[in-house]
Length: 199
Image 1: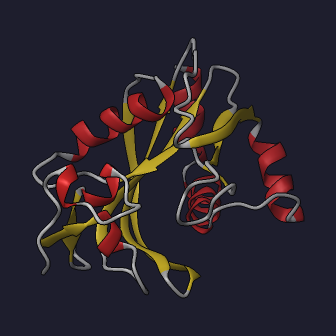
Image 2 (image 1 turned 30 degrees about the vertical axis):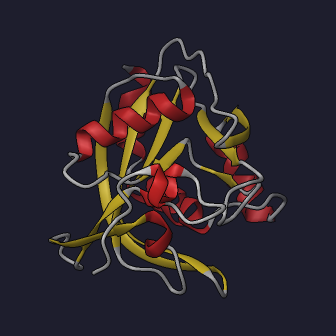
């Protein structure tokens, strides 16, 4: 597998430093099989790599959703879950989820694993997501969101029932992984969410 880019000097013209991050390639059993740059992982139909998605709730039971920045290569300006990203090479999942939650939203809170699933979603001929994704939930009792504007165009808290209605109506554009994850959370994990919100 190709070597990851290790320094900004090695980036291709137009790439951001994040494009050269070493991500973890896995098999379907989540066994590490190699590494590749973020850019390479998302080219074509994508390379299967380790990822995570976070759903942050407040004490009213609302979930934080974000609109992806216009400059995103994949699904720009689509609405998505609170935060999603990838652990880097040699980084634990626990470290990665806390790092990214703070980098994107300025938040820190305990996160609880719910489930893991594999999906592939094609954006266009040049890019896709192909991930083995671990899904976590967390609760921030006094959330003061500080959104990273390089990553996030907008954000809002929304009641689960209102989000259900918007997804059913197709009134807004949502990322494909968000739709799959939210459907499974609502179908299989409502007791865990209720317990989390009650604290």
